[in-house]
Image 1 (cartoon, rainbow, N blue to C red):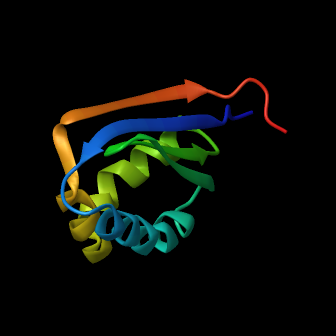
Image 2 (image 1 turned 90 degrees about the vertical axis):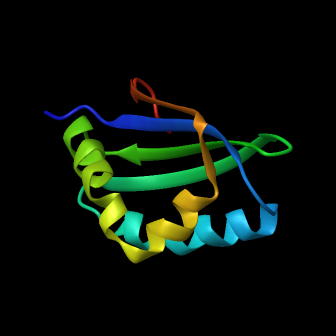
Length: 98
């Protein structure tokens, strides 16, 4: 039995919020097509600080998508709007989900 995981990325963005949101929306179909994808939620904590949460069937699916994300053209615009010096990435085992 596999254990579902939540991938949690917290980061600051660069540039205009509307450009970032458009780039985030553009990459969502690619994420949704990846094996093991369940759901994605993007939330703004405060001006320019975001949490991107992606639910996966298991850690292997999450890591596999992470290994391939830079190979897709849609990722370039999204990644260009992230301040990588502020990025923290974690994976959490989902215990309860409704």
